[in-house]
Image (cartoon, rainbow, N blue to C red):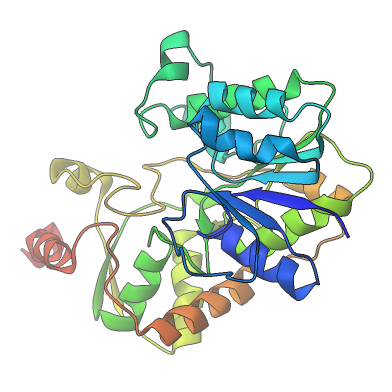
Amino acid sequence: MKKILILGGTGFVGRILTEELIKSGSSPVLFNRGIRNAGIFPELRKFKGDRLKIEDIKQIAYESWDVVIDFSCMFPDNLDGITDMLMGKAGRYIFVSTASVYPMDDPAKWIDPVNEDAETLPCTAEQRKDPDVLATYGQKKAECERDLLEKDWLDSIIFRPALIYGWYDPTDRFYYWLWRVQTQNEILIHPGNDKLTNTYSEDFAKLIQTAIDIDKHEKIYNAVTHSPVTIKEYLDITCRLLKKTPKFVELSTEFLEENKVQPWGDLPMWLGGMNLVLDNSKVLKDFPVKFQSFEESVKGCIDYYSALGWKEPAYGISPAKERELIEKSPKNQ
C-alpha cells in the first residue's frame, strides 16, 4: 500500500478523495491547519500546521512519501520550499492547479477548445509575492506550474480543473441555478449561448485517485469532466430532473451592464459573451476513468442538495435583487 500525503484533504475535492481512499483500504496522512471540518477522519494520522510557516511544514520532511497530493498551494515560493524540502523523499507530486492559468480576458483565444499547450498567464515578481491570493490567482498558479515543471527530478502531474461543482462545494456557484429552478417561479438569465466545460467533484476525485498509481503520463492535463454545455442546456436538464417549469426572463447584455450585473460574480457561469471550453482529450486518452455524463452529474447534485434542504445560496445576486431587475426590465414596462 502506497504512503500518501495530502496537503488539504478535508475541504472539497480533497475530502471526497480522502473518503474514497479510505474505502479502498488506504490510510492517507493529512497536513492542514485543522480549520475546515476539523473533526472528520479521526481514524487518520494528521499533521496540523500552516504550510506557509517553515517550522510547521518541516513536520512532513522527516519522512518519505510515495505520493504527495497538493490541493492547497497558492504561492510559488511556498511550492518551491516544500518540493525542495521533499527532494528524494517524494515519489510523485500531484498538483491541483486551475483553468484560470489561461488568459480569461480575450474571447478570441476561446473560440476553439483550449488544450494544454495554450499560453498561460505570466507572473511578475510582485505578483509572485502578492499576499492577495484572489487578485493574482491565475498568475500565481501558472507560476507554480512552471516552477514544478523545472524540477525534472520530480515525477509530477498537474491537473487544471475548471469550475468545480458537486458534493461539499463551498462556493454555491453551480448550485445558484439549481436552487432557482427548485424554488423560483421566474429566473433572470443572461443572453447568448456561451459554452462551458466544468469539473464534477466526484469525477475529479476519481481522476486524482487514478493518478496515484498510473504508470505512464504527461505532465499537464485539463481536468474537465463533461462535454461542452450552455447555461440554457444546464437549466433545461435541471427543469426536467426537478419536474419544474419556471419562466426564464432573458435580459439583454446592455440592460445587465447598465444595472451593474457582473458576469460570473452576479450571474454565475455567465462569461459575458465568451466560451470557456477546455479540451480534455488528453486526460480521456491517458487515464482509465469513465466520467459521468453532465446530466448524471446534475442528478447527483440534486440528490446532494435535496438532502441538505435547499438552503438559499450565498453566491450571486440575491432573490430580492433578481426580482427588482425583472420588474425593472423593458419586458415589464
